[in-house]
Every structure is written in C-alpha cells, then in structure tokens.
Image 1 (tube, rainbow, N blue to C red):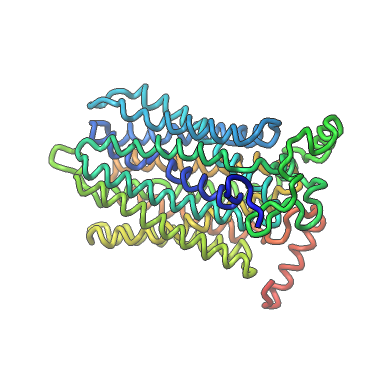
Image 2 (cartoon, rainbow, N blue to C red):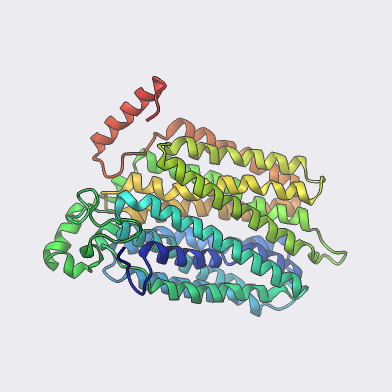
Length: 473
C-alpha cells in the first residue's frame, strides 16, 4: 500500500485533522455560556453573545463556500488560517472580567469567530472531495465526521475536568481550544491538495470515469489528482473550460431539493439548538447567589459526551446502512423524529432527576449524528457536476445556522421571561415542521450524483415505482 507522505495515508490524515477540528468545535459555547452567567451576565446577554457567532456565520458561510469553490489558492491554507482565527477569537473569553461588562470584547470576538469558522466546513469538504472523488466521498466524509465527534468528546471531557478541578475559576478549560487549533494546523500539512476542480464538484478528465482520482483503501490512486490548477490542463484552456462547466447559481439554488433541504435544516436547528442549553440549566441549577453550581460542570460535560458518543455510533451505523443500500430519506426522517420525542421527555422528566434528563442526550446523538452524516451526502447528490458544491454547502449551513442562532436567542429570552418549560414547548411544536416538510416534499437522492436533470427525474420515477411495489432499491 502506497502512503501519501511521512507514512500517513490520506484517510488517516483527514481523520487526524477532523479529530482536532472536532475538539475546536464551536468554541465550547455551552461552557462559555455557563462561565458568563457565573461572571454576572443575564441570560438574555448570554443568548446574544452565543447568537452573534451564528448570525455572522449565516451571513458569511455562503460567500465562504463560493470563495472555496472559485479559489486558485491552496485550500489547505484557508483551513489553517480559519482554524487559528477561530481559536484566538474563542479564547478571548479568558480576558472577560467579573460583572455584566466586557460586552464589546465578547460580542466582537464572536463576530470574528463566526467569520473564520465559516471556512472550516467547506474547506474540509472540498479537500475531501478533491482527494477521494465522488464515488469514495461518502466513505471518507463518514470517517471525517466520526473522528470529529470523537474530538468533540475529548474536548468536552478535558474542559469538564479542568472546569471541575479549577472551580469556580473555570475559564482555563478554554485553553483546550488553543491547543486543538495548533494540532489541527499541524495535521493540515499532511493533507493532499487533490484535484481542485473536483473539489468544487466538477466532472473533469480525472474523474469522468469510475475510479479515477479516488482512493483504494485510503490511498490516492491517481497521482495527477494531486496536481495544481496550472498542471491539470493548459492554463488558459483550463480556466475557460472551468467556467463553461459551472452551472448558474440560480439553477442550483432554485432546485426543489435545495429549497427543501434548507428549510428542513432551518426548522430542525431552530427547534433543536436551544434544548441543550435549557437542559444544562435544568440539570445544573444555581447556588443561592445565582452562580452556577460546581456539579453543573461535569453534568453538562457528561451531556455533551453522551450526545457525541451516540453521534459517533450513529455515524458508524449510518455509514454501514448507506453502504447496504439504505436511501437518504428514511435515515433522515429518523433523525427528524428524534427531536420532538426528546423535547417531550425533557418536559415530562424536568423534576425526575439528573439521570433521566441526561439520558435524553441519546436522542440528541441519534438526531445530530444522522443529520451531520447525511448533510454533505445530500449536498453532493444535488450539486455534484454543477461546480457549486461548496457554495451549496455554505448556503445550507447558513440556513441551519440561522435556525440555531434564532433558537439560542429567542429560547433564552423565553427562559428569562416565561421559564424553561415554555421554551421547551416551543421547540416541541417547531420540531414537527421539518418532519412534515421533508416527508412530503423531498425525493430520494441516492444514486443521482452527477446525473443530468432528465436522468435524475427518470431515476426518481423508477425509484417511486419500485417503492410502490414494495421492492428495496
């Protein structure tokens, strides 16, 4: 078996980077929220702080994806810079002072964090597609996502342990973020650049036939798949051909499947994002002076670990089921259905003790695991061959981020004004919308990657006919 460099295969290199990016995560937002409350911030201000990153990202992510699609620079450079900037901005909370102050510091660094983090997902997805090709993309992305969840587990364990041991001065648990960024940048150096055109979802002479530019057991088979723009074709002809192959933004954005995926993800995250924060507040409780109890730190860390561990198992199982022939739609419906069940159980068990409340994170892991796994699959099914893969990754992520941001903002305001049960009841009602929307309006996309529109329509019709006859396709 031929390895990529320094004895590390591409698949292992991507797994390492994904692990440390998983540790970097979302800046340990849940711990930051608890820490700010302990400093004297009210729930509304915390909701604004945590939402600013999301609001910024939802504006920037689509543009970030477009930049990653069009760039002639090495995408690995973007990934390294984005990781470092995200870590520095997330670590700024170390300088927040006691009291309901320093809003400008936290708010501004959350905006920077939102901008920089917007490039991480599209960069990693583009490099994965560029290296492994459309046929091996699902397997490679499943590995990336799995190790990202493992990294999130490690981050939560380290942060929770540091926060508990150093309580009440829990701010040093955020040093995990800086360490993770440095390790991620070191791992990026091991990644291959791959085929830049294939990285934006274009059919090229390297991937037009099955197997070209993909991997065999995690090893790049085609050396040409690792060349730069200049070496792929004659420069002028390559750039001209690239523009000719790229579809218009409107043809991709107006596709029914794109619209349904964006709306489904928006409502799912609108209902889901605030639930963990509310759960942490229910489990941890406050001291008499309003500060967070010491026991809240390991409880919330346990909630994150349990969810991420379940996501890891779900990602592995989902990958196996996909390889066995399961379609995208039934798996995604299972993800959506898990959310209202989770909300209902938290409401029913709000006074039943921390153990039962903590167990609801299993459902969060199932829903989040399937959603995270199938998101890039669905985008690649829709966009491959259009040259708009990364901009569609950015657009869908922006829609999801908008839902999550509004959830954190409005959810915490409702908690402050009306209580935890009212906030959870709102999430329960909202969680029904994506189930109905996706179930009625989203066709099956498995097997349609790279097809022309007419071919896709024929495939959908055949699939629907076969499903009506009770056969498995």
